[in-house]
Image: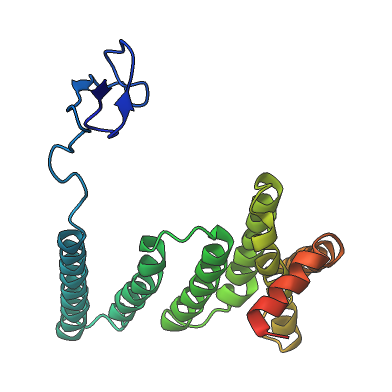
Length: 225
């Protein structure tokens, strides 16, 4: 009997190479195969390296933000561009941790990213002098892209689509936000408003009609009713 020191599998017969990984087999010990050393990763070391990298990135972010403020004050240009740097850094720190957690629910991650990006667009619009482009064009475009993206996930993911139904329904409801902003006079593009509202309405109707059971069970699980 031979054994593979990579897969830790014992192989009988005249095989020279492991059928799983293709590595050359080694003679097994008479009373079982002994692993050649500890092949499991040192999780404590990996965690320490991860924490060190986060602290280093935090230090660099604070340093970059502080330097930008100092330069903006010492060399005035009539425009507080350092606020854009600070807002961008805050946005990155809000978005990087969820990505590093490697969550499997991509629809949840997409909804989170859409909302954060919309807030970033509003902040930038306010910093550079309010023009209204964030609520008239940026937010409707983001919501349309989010609705279409989650719909594509449902279509192409036949095994995980039930967990995406709740987020598709939520994204569809968010599609009516530009319509509300238009009624309050904050949005000026009626075309973008109608397109986003139509996609949102279609998303809600399709979710209710075809995913009613999954949606109801998801609501019960999340809100306990």
